[in-house]
Length: 307
Image 1: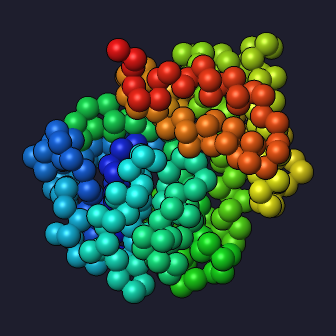
Image 2 (image 1 turned 30 degrees about the horizontal axis):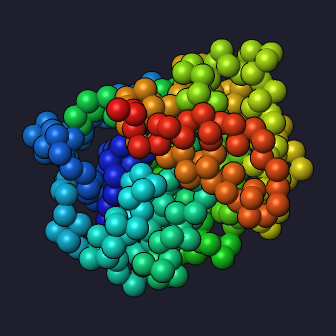
């Protein structure tokens, strides 16, 4: 199975390295010092699940060099979705599946007009990992799951093939017939947690235990759920209990990628997280007071640390 990883950060690097170790033909697309180090030293993933060091690592900054692949794990930042979507066209064959694993809920919709209906599946990545140096990725905790499925809910042969490869690679995987629900369940958690952790500059552990802050997690999650339902997404009645249960089981030092980007002075994915909740709330007539505040407090940092 030929797999291309577009965006070799914590998500792409973590899942891509596991699939490569399991015998898949994986090529990583990256740039700069990260790419140079992968070529010269090999990609390292340091994890409580067990370290992986891929030597050699197949890596390039040019998707056209790779040729057609079976799967593309599409892991770029949200602001690069359209440009990267156009760049990967040389890798797309008639049966290729592109699986967006971004934070947020709209990456697949944005790729459809670029790549076509047959090429795009839906995907959810659940892993806490980040680049800590050129060609080095550190995972926090052992939880690692990928959920993917056809956008129309059908169970496809290509989905079954990827499921088997993921299971062989040793991480949790689900071939879903309700990928929109899965995307929004993650969005309820992440849109809320990412902004609260970023605003407070503290990891999730002490925040979820704080009696003054925990209700903010719950209020934010309820707003996202209300927006999702108003948009027509089927969400279970126990969604908030499920999301808070997941939050309670996150590793205490865990910080979502947006919080790490804020600390590093990098651009933020805020418009696709709390910003998306606020925008959809206005469009659909759903009040989102918690996310209005979170979005406003982080808005000065959207393009990185203010000068």
